[in-house]
Length: 192
Image (cartoon, rainbow, N blue to C red; front, side, top):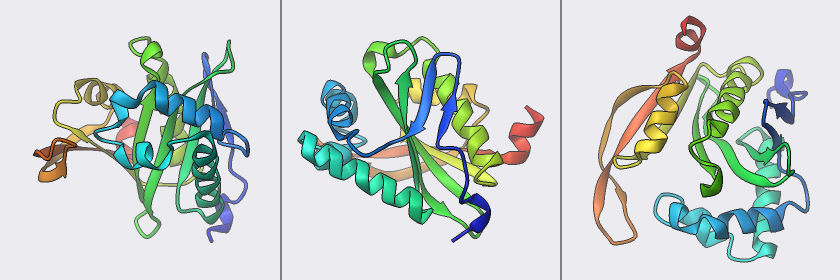
């Protein structure tokens, strides 16, 4: 365990959102978010879709994310709309390698809230959290080659394309496709 990160923030405030760690009994709203965005998730996030097929399984998902947080193996945040207090997305820092240290990002924003800059706000808060509180040196983001919205978003947040992962993903159709890899280092963010 890294003692220096035992007392990190569990909630981050942006102008339009509260980005906070999931809590017990958030499983139902997580399930609803996934069901409302299943067409966006079923290809690249198929494991999440498969694991959260009921409110009860949503609660198990939430509890696993909480245990990952406590064990310092991953940090998952819900993105909550400030006005309505509705869960509108999530951001996950996972596959953390504490030797470097670095981690991967993934995120989802409810389709009703896209194109408004909300995820850019939330993602910037998570990037600062990752570098300042978790003391990570690098973040990665991997996406489908045709996920233009995700690519635009991470580029807005100063990520740079690092390369392609050829034949690294199988779509639900069985087609094997390439992925695109983006990265952001602490020093690049400080210069931006």
